[in-house]
Length: 440
Ligand code: ATP
Image (cartoon, helix red, strand yellow):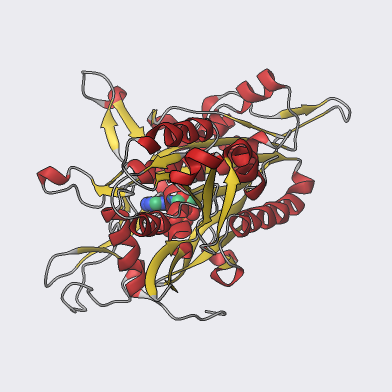
């Protein structure tokens, strides 16, 4: 490990507790005892997860001319997964502990059973991580279907469709955000590794001679994306895979790693997949997936550079990086220093008192801000407690409406990080918040 840091198991517990207590995540099927390692996203979690995906889409698709999006099916026929290599090689080494009979991924346990301490295991066997199911009412060969274990293949199988309908030419990318499923042997660490998760992937098709340059470009862009959304540089690093560790399709892979409470681990992988995928699908389907360069009068199979991120894993990293405890007015508070673009609520409107006189103007402020920001509205308990509650879920701005507001048509804007308060006329409130969030 080149840059060592102190692991912090307590931080993981604190963030998990906060996520449960405040409705970021719920254990799936909790009233039936829970479904192992499967999570539902609650009112705050769904806001934040959508914000993570929206930030990715904005930067990877909306603000670029060279990338378009798709949304492909989750269910797919075996042919796709045979051609991609997943049926054959998308496996992890599974071992059974001979003493307690628990099952583990051999490469994650260092020869000692985490359950009972035994060192006696069965021979490792290849366990395929894909979820297999059946499409239609008749069982049998022709009915077999798989839930996708990555979103990437949808971009390859639609290569011609996108090329012909958009008239893009390499270098260009196809992006997708959506659910993927892997029957992980040992899901663990909250939403870091789950069997059902969300990915944000982009396949960038380039002339082969430019592949290395674009590989470096995307590593740089993706590393900086996390920095720009508030993960500090001492919690991020790049890890280039050694040639012998590369996946079957890869000519080079670099992971963006995050300093999780248990150590450095993957956040996103950027791979140079060469022409592996398009060639495999061309051969297996009989449909040529190529690009014809009219100026050079030459036909070629583009190489692919793939930045592959996890939306749910990224949300967890953003939560971990944002979690702080500090002292305000002699009292310890928990604060999520989330970038405003990721915060579940960007603004909370807080009438100072429940008295009906304040309701009209408070609702007016809420209606003014709601079309532009995700807003919470809270009238319960003391204002101090309400500030703490908003700090704890990362709301950047609290707007307090008090009795003076009725006279001066102004409200107090409180900043989450500095806790400083300023009086702002309601007429200027939207502009003031836009300025603070750099949206002009
Ligand atoms: P790992 O080595 O952690 O199993 P991987 O290298 O197989 O992951 P990729 O196939 O490169 O992962 O997937 C791209 C991204 O998708 C990962 O960087 C991660 O953010 C996310 N991801 C993959 N598997 C899971 C999972 N089981 N749960 C949550 N996110 C996942």
